[in-house]
Every structure is written in C-alpha cells, then in structure tokens.
Image (cartoon, rainbow, N blue to C red; front, side, top):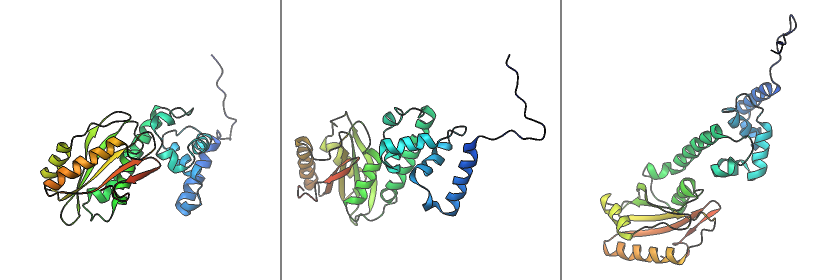
Length: 236
C-alpha cells in the first residue's frame, strides 16, 4: 500500500487552482456579467456538472469547435459528445438547458400573445426543432383576433421526410376552434428551401382550409441557420 502523504504541521492542504478561478468568475458574473467572455460563461455552466474538473480547457475547445456560445448551447448532443470530456452527465444537462431555452422562446405562443408576424413562430420552431436530426411538423393555431391558441406537433418522420396529411392538420384546427394556422417543419440538412413535396403539401392544406373557412397564414421551414417563409416568398 502506498504511504499517505500528510500535510506539514500548520499548513492547510492546498485547494485545486481552478476552484479559486471559478469563484472569481462567479464574483465577476454578479458584479459585471457582460464582462465575462463566452468561454468563461461556459466554464461556469460546465462547472455545475464537472465540479471537480478544471473546465476552462473544455470550454475553450467547445467554443472553438462550434464557433460561439450560442453554437455550443444549440449544438446536437451527438456532436457535443464527440468532444473529449463531454460525457453522459453533461449530455443530460445540455438536454435540460435545450428544453428550458425552447420553452422560453415558445412562451409567446403558449401565453396566447397576439400574432404579429411569422418571426415569432419561426423562432419558436427553430428553438424546438431546428437542431433535430429528423423532420417534425408542427402547427400554431390562432383565433379570429390572431391570438395564439396552441402550438402542437402533428407529425414526426425521418431525416428527410415527415408524413403529414391535410386532414390531420385541419382536424386539429377544428378541435381548437381556431380561425387560422401557421404550419412549420424543419429541414435537418440545414437548407430551409422548400422541396416540391413541401410546396404540394402547402397547396393542399391551404385549399382544404379555405373550404372550411380557415386561414393558412404561413408555412415556415426552419433549420439551424435560418428559416423560409411561404408567405414572404409569395407562395401563399
């Protein structure tokens, strides 16, 4: 058995250097949060899980790999875990952060605020599904005063396709007694440009909705880098 190394009398065992550094970052955060660099904020976030690690090297590597603090926070878990030191415990923490962020962005939708333009729903869609590896199809429903009533998923598919039928979308709108709807889905490949299938589905839903007295206000295609609006492009 290896001998236990004892501290010299009168001398306390030294704490790891990163604990003092982390405490100074906390004090800086409380005093002047804007003075913290992106990687320093990330250090503190990582330190919530990796309490006994020096998180500065990992924080800097993540910012370098994903380009910015936003890039790290919105990166796919599968990509993050490719970085040495980003294990299961951090993956679970990042999933929690992602869900909190998505719900904050979705707040105007969930709180029935007045719909002022497609950007509100586009941001909610990007936060919720823009980073996913498979397609999902969501619908935001509004009343006759353009107040947002519901924000629900109606379909989940594969990496390049979601099977959605107009009747499912319209049934949901009728169930909520909505007056209008905004369609939204993601393109995992990163390009939000509409496909032929996207255009065809939009036409079919808009045609069926009109017969029922419902308004299709927009169809938004989102990706991590941005979004495409059928309304802005004159396709509705």
